[in-house]
Length: 336
Image (tube, rainbow, N blue to C red):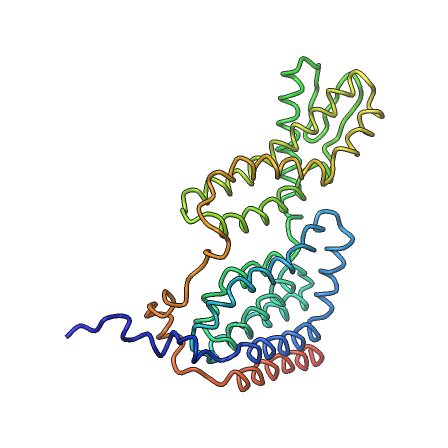
């Protein structure tokens, strides 16, 4: 005889009267996070320095409050699932700490910083449980945007921008001789420097784009088109900005055009690009942010999640194990 799916859910989805508070599990997550941040403090300090002092990564200062907001709007669904830790989360934490350890010993900051973030993600999965982790999958995954990245794509962006600017300059009737990232015109020689490659706008737009794609779109097709726009539009807009600077320089001089560019080339310019993209996409939004993500009932019906979760562990014991693993890596780092 077949059993109705709802008959299996009382153990996995709790009634409102039976739901325990989630303050303690989240407090335990915070406790482990403090331990991990303390052990990996050098890398978190380096990341914070980049967020605050390097213009390319200043948008990351907005990521922590966005993550808190994303968690806040999912707390109602987290309350519905049966509480219980997941030992698999400790394995994820260990993987993250291994990445951090490897990055520290090879002086690869990107690996070390990614590892520090993955360790936090793993402890959240471990203490809160896999079902809660699936409900919070997007805010936990979004934590990876805390890691500054993008330096690797600056050279190709410089050459791509130079190619587009050269084409636009010649199209506008200005005599141009181009050599790589150097663009020679009657008004002077212009160089597409690293700061002019547009990487900061591209990364910031991609960070925003993934947030909007998840929270405001339900269709994968619309998400894909929106993300494509978030990549293409900043690159094109940056090329147009650089071309406009060169074109204006032909009439007012390179120094005056450069002064104008320094005024325009900043978050004002980026704000205009955001307004254009979001203004066009707004009419196509399909849902409110609170509706994004899996509901507790959907997670309860995922047989693979149920199998992987297994018997729920005591969150306090998982918390202690996570702290022990973290301290073990701290000791190993000192001994190596």
